[in-house]
Length: 132
Image (tube, rainbow, N blue to C red; front, top):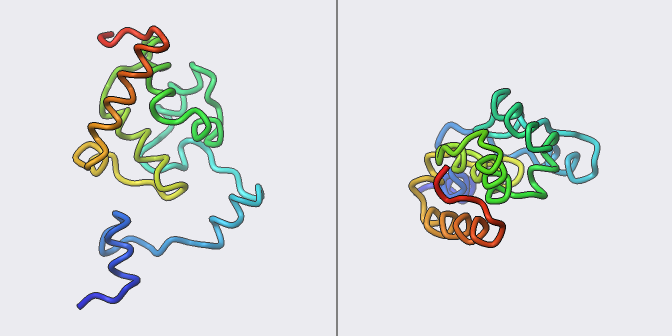
């Protein structure tokens, strides 16, 4: 039988070989002593950071404030990207904060439908074309 710590890591989507969550890092982020760049978040790299800069998202904190749905809808509106894989990557990068989850877990997970419905609702309310 697995011990409690190992089981909680698996439940969090961290896998067998993933490092334990670092509470020291989490507390430094919460205290404002450590700033994460967008490229430091899981699933996101320099290219995503450049794309997000085109819509005014320059920091990980700003991305977190906007959320995956709004950020992705704004990327679509600006015709920067409309890839659903990017949407799953954004959603995975932000939850759980700051560790994130792999984008494939989000794409195959139980919240996939609710994310798509939230995106559709946002696009309807803010006049973003559903097909771009």
